[in-house]
Length: 226
Length: 204
Image (tube, rainbow over the protein chains, first blue to last red):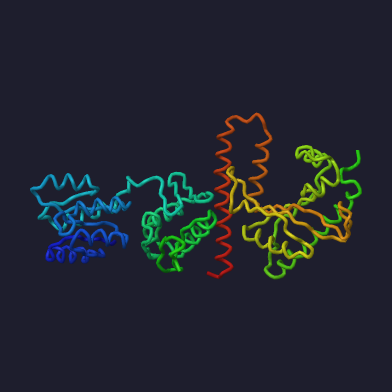
């Protein structure tokens, strides 16, 4: 699992990073709010951990910008114990949880597990990218014309559209979309990417999925891909 | 009553037999090369006398052989029903290459789906033949309407056709919406099967 950690105190950041890595999390550490927003738009994370007090842009402002861009990744805010207002503004800005400092690492780990376990209840039922629209409820993909998708195709398309421009490795897609099936053959990812590619073409889409079998895949606008 | 086609009634049968044999010929060639015919069903008919007269009336034309064979283009009608979407486009390219054939009109309702969900590829071709045509020319030309569909599109089209001509349906808007949903689901299956065939053939 990939974590984005935004904490300006280098020692604190190094300590958290070490513990998370020990528990097999992949951590990207940034040290201010501007870097946090930039990094969040470049890579898809499973969860983000933000300190509130950071230079250049504070954690709450950074979170607001990230939520405004349509990013629904769960976020834990690290707040000072005495500041109730911080917790209120943080949660209202779109944070899913908070931890007051000082905190026990065990608690951070438990809250990370809790957040990445949850259903994304607040995801929109209609997504769009370029001129392509996905009606998640109806499992319908439309552009110049419309076509229906199966359950897994819908999940895969939704993931790609929510993270347009971000790369997903085949293994990551197999884990996220086919998580309920034991020992799923990663070849299934290539088959479903192929289905989505043909369906996007069938409806006259101006977006495409770039990538090769077994590699990483990105949903991008058709003109800019090579 | 004499056929509206007059002296050309028999010629139409000959022309239809000609185009059918061209289509069968290229399909046999494809079968030799790739192991599969380019179509599942090849259906053809000369439009009945009644139908043609009714169409002339509808278009404000006189009920004459000239109207039927020059102004109207579907006296000879073919439907090519294929297993896969790509096969439709293979057939189209072969049809273009038929000697003496020119494509007068074509409409791709597969890429430009009709609002009700109808998918199909329509072509009007003009075939040069050794026979005299309705303008008195020899060698003469005859129009032929060709519809190309997948099996799924064809099933859907006949259901939709039935629905159009039944006047006592309860909740017609609901039926129309559900038919559209079916059309899109069938299209999804057509595309998926095409994808699987590509994956199998590409050896990936």
